[in-house]
Length: 303
Image (cartoon, rainbow, N blue to C red; front, side, top):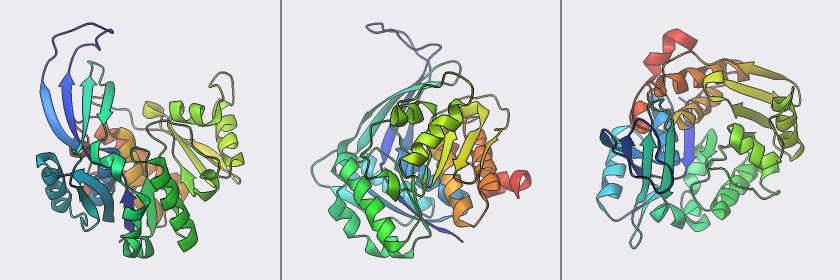
């Protein structure tokens, strides 16, 4: 079984469903309220565990009920929680999420203890770095911690996958350390400064990322699937047609499933198809971690 090291955030998601998003300054009456475990790092760890990965998680939570519940949830999913740290002062991360009638979402995150995950914390988990087959990370923890993790991965010869979300400008020295980057359309445009206008935009944007030093690029396209490019090939994989209920964590599920498929040795196209199938199932369900499918749900589709 592939061993995946996920480094990143843990949040509690507070979700309100509404017919439409409010305008600035407007109060509207919503519908159902839900509270789910979330955070990009935690979501990806759960997704990877459910589709067959042996997962170590490096994260930081607060000394509060949200943190306690999060760690209990990770353990229930079979994730190794030995490297999930507790900050004595900061609260656990929280995300406030609004989901409209089309299943689209708007999210505001209060990082809490996630903002205190430091390079020194990663150095306490040396065994996890040495034993893993692949490292997966996002951008809901400090950028210096992301860079430190990438450098450690490079020194150990471990594949390092970065899901550059939430979107932000990255230092030039980070790109050559990445085996794979997996932005969505918005994130890819921010990272390259290029427009989506015109024919061949996907290829131009992917090429710009490759020129920065990244080995492989996957641009996730939501309902349209995902686009892959490296120095040798390029192609697009279609996503299954489904009716979206909640798109929260669809990208996280994609990345978690992709990490497992790649660590298992799948070629790029079947690995991306595996991930697209997982993401498509996720959008048909409410919640973040709760939406992640299990391996047996994908077996008939991609094995």
